[in-house]
Length: 571
Image (cartoon, rainbow, N blue to C red):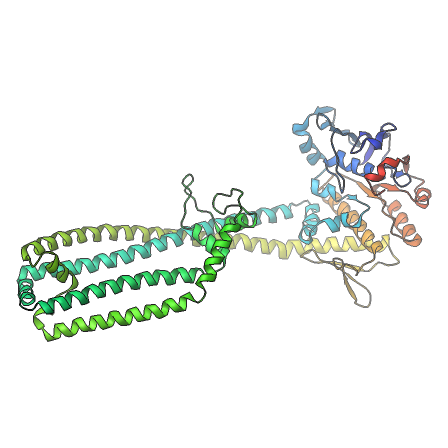
């Protein structure tokens, strides 16, 4: 499909069409020369053609109120403007709702078509505008077997699986913390059950009454035991609090972002009952959004608060460890004193802290203590059964999550292996074939300076001369402007040929804005001769009279200088 005509009634700036519409009709697939002096609107016309086909422009604000029409071979006409785009295709008219689909189905993908427009600015050329990885994607798009789409689809599936894995891991981590809490609770309940059972046994056997008699005969012994028992209990509480402080201090040793993301694992959305995965939270933080709800907010204050906490906690872990050691040493000393008293008075050897407390609280009422012990033991047994069931449930949930995570990881690895296979086999072959085509066109379009082109899998482009000297396309200063222009031109010619051969597009036109401005006379001659030898249709804008002469075979549209355009264009 080639351009057969176009009409620009209004576009970008009113000065462009102040003398009337810019139009060209009845072109029979031949090349088109849009000539004019500087500031005549050539680059605007170039952009108008791009806008009419794709609704886009390069380095230009297109404004509003445009009215541009493009006629293509194959009975396809495209109009863009107010009130919207319209398509005439094969005798039928279609509105905006179907226009883009028809262009894609009949002409080709937007990404491939966009590369066929080469702007006069070096930094707007296709290889300059495309990130390295997307250069390879364009080549794969041109092969028509949807390899790039297949890889992209698989990569998206891998990302989705990874997000699922992170969600499941976050859920598992939360349940693991829940399990540890339940285990601690069960340990406490078992300890309570054991101690209340001991108190009950002491009361039933009469040994508690004997201990009570000992204390009543020796109040000083009771006072010592009571004080030591109270101090030990207090020390145990202090140790637990210090352990919690140490855990918090260790958490603050991590990166601030990691602290925030880990904290999210504790929260579940009350609506969808889902957790925010690590990747989503990380991305939201990058965008200054709340990592949980994704609402736009300033999270700097949160970062500042955590950073301040981190600074205050510097060295705190060592201090806490020292204090913990002191508390444990004192606890052991107290326990040793209690054991010493028990050895000295064997009749109180079976006494535990609960019995001490009950003798004091019940004023040695053994029957009351017995009743309290039975009641507390029964409650502890009930709690033990309840919490054991909860622990079993959470352990089953963790086991289920482990299975799901393993299954998801296997699926992710399988998808990734397929990507690697496609990239290592199919991609390498296709890149090699395209590299050969590109080298062929480059050698012919610029025989005086051409070197071998090597297109790497990561999108890097390297030129190698006969002596093996390597120059990289993306290293500014390695290449001359003329080489950059001709590499881009030969790249697009190769892309067009590949896409046409594979049926990826039905588009045989390349639009060039002042393509030879940076070429000397000899390079211009070689380039023009080669372009004329191709079946591809070229639409060129130029203010160079030499180019006008060399393209005398082309259908010509002459533009008149519009001085008011100086504010809007680099023409």
